Amino acid sequence: MNTPTTIDEVIAQLDEIIETSIATNSPMGYFAALYRKVTVKVKEGIATDYFENGPRMEQLDVIFANRYLHAYQAYQTQNSLTESWKKTFEISADYWPIVLQHLLLGMNAHINLDLGIAAAEVCKNENIQDLKGDFDKINVVLSDLVGEVQDDLCEIWPTLKRILKWSKNLDDFMVDFSMKLARNGAWKFAVEVHATSPSELPAFIAARDQKVAKNVKLIFSKNIFVRFVYCTIRWREKGTVAQKIEILRN
Image (cartoon, rainbow, N blue to C red; front, side, top):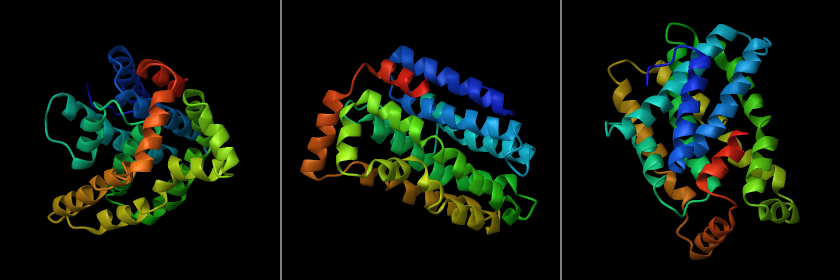
């Protein structure tokens, strides 16, 4: 894969990952399909002048996406990559995680680690506070996807909607699982990265990476009852991996 320099090239490479995942029945395609939706929404926002600085937003999107794309390629070629992505990709070989867990794993690595680094990089020679308005607007774009993703997950596991409606937590659940992670520390981390000297930056990012990687344990509870629930969901998810990727993509 070549390194994308435009948002259209990012979408094209995401399509490649999705097609490969469909052909191989790889759960790696779940996050790629979700991420493609996000990228298309950002592209639409740029085209309609939703963001204060469209060119900067495209640059941010490309830098951000390249961290995921490079990690994916590094894993495929057995090269070094961040611990957060390594754990995420390794779990893709496991049968038992449900679609939601795969999505959470990808969002954990990409938002809690990559987003802050990308935001700092795009503002490398500028005041990072000038980005804050557009950074917050990304959250609005992401929140707009909640309904779509909710419908996708309920198509994959129809019982989900009934259970969450019964518990009156449907909207809160979907918003929490979706992209609130972007509000919970990503901006603070971006500001810290921006303020860190080049000589100290590798160690600072490595420490953050280790912290983010530990979040994987939160997504895979050791509680026997919770694990039983996840297993039950997994048994009742409709379709093959490839079919579930198609649902998320479409």
